[in-house]
Amino acid sequence: MEREVIGREEEKQILQRALDSSEAEMVSVIGRRRIGKTFLINEAYKQHIVFSVTGIQNAPRSEQLRNFANSLKELSPNAVIISPPKDWLDAFFLLIEYLKQKSQQKKLVVFLDELPWMATHKSGFLRGLSYFWNSWAAQQNIVVVICGSAASWMINKIVKHKGGLHNRVTKRIHLQPFTLAETEKYLKSRNIHFDHFQIVQLYMATGGVPHYLKEVIREKSAVQNIDHICFSPDGLLRTEFHNLFVSLFAHAENHIAIVRVLARKRQGLTRQQLVEATSLSAGGTISRTLEELLQSGFVSAYRSFGKKKKEKLYRLTDEYSLFYLQFIEDKEHEGENVWHHLSQTQAYKTWSGYAFESICLKHIPQIKKAMSIAGIYSLSGSFYKKGTDTEEGAQIDLLIDRNDHVINLFEIKFYNQPYTLTKAAASQMREKMRIFKETTKTRKQLFWVFISTFGLKTNPHSLSLISKSLTMDDLFVN
Image (cartoon, rainbow, N blue to C red; front, side):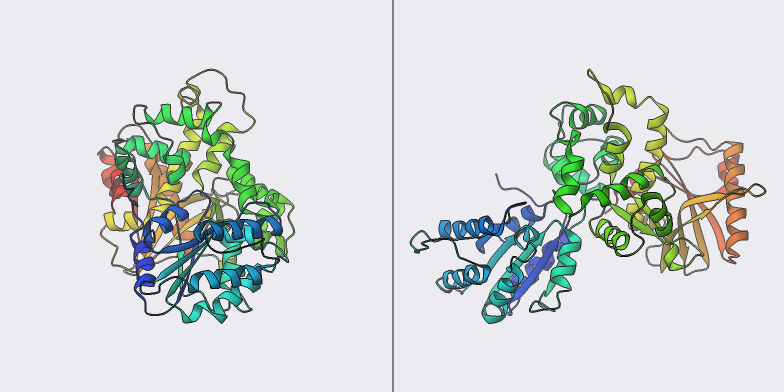
């Protein structure tokens, strides 16, 4: 049965344009581990790939070269390849000789997967790739796809390359996790028909990573699936955390240190606060590590309203990492139905609120569409003011600053039934609005928007305060 590529509409169009182009194209595809990069390329180009090779993790240059030669030999059994090439220049020369034998009536595709694993320090791989492109491929009817999970490596070493590959990448794809709508479509493609509440619960624990979602069993509820995937002895995500970071980053301990600190700080932290909390060098180490986490999608940076650019807040927005550190790591879980029991605890209530907020922050285009403001220029951000002995603080995790002289402030709640806004909660929200207005000195009109799983019950408090109520269903809009 032919497999369908779910979503990825923009990415498929980019790949097709490269195929239709009358020129040689070099396409870089980046995205975190298990996000579906290889599947997308193989499906989009399956009729055109004439050579593909995948780097081997933690293998020396000699093994990478042997792997390259073996991949070539499998495709050209009649070719005489006596021994693996001695260096990458020789390897790409062999590839050129092989490709010269292929008919170029249709566009050829060469797929180099997990490039960072082949292009190790002082390996000479990038020189070889530069030679291949500049001396031959750039004049051919060809698409060269270079792919890697280490997003920051791909950007710094390939996209921003200062040597022979400078400005050679013609098209770029940064593959992101599925949205909620894509997650629903993916599950349906596997004959799993969950309602939106079940999908949101799954998403909060695993995110929109296709490889993780592949573990979902249709006969089980979201709670049962999380129990199986994350807590059973053979569950995929029980031990994924460490492998995930080590496979992506050199010196992964620095990345994990930042992730651990952010997992404990719901409101996010500034760069300086991260330096103080992690003891990482305030110079290149923290900057490089943060950039790598941002590029790989584990951490997101949010504009702190009314503050300088350097004071933006960093939040952990990778669902699985947050879930793992909260509920799996160093926890002694025995027996069955572990997640069913944990989901009755206060720790669950705290985590679920934060996790649902993070999902909303990732679905701002959908929120704008539901509010009918998609056509109005706007900037999203957050607001945080620390309290003092004499003055109360305030935190607003999401706000949308619109060009039509309006700022929407958002209150986000995860609840298993329609939410009732009490007099006390309404009073707190009014106080937040007052602090925001006084602190920022904004002259724009302020409106509260409420986002909750099953909506907001109408009562005098909601009618007097809330301008718009959204539900989780609004996050599933394409």
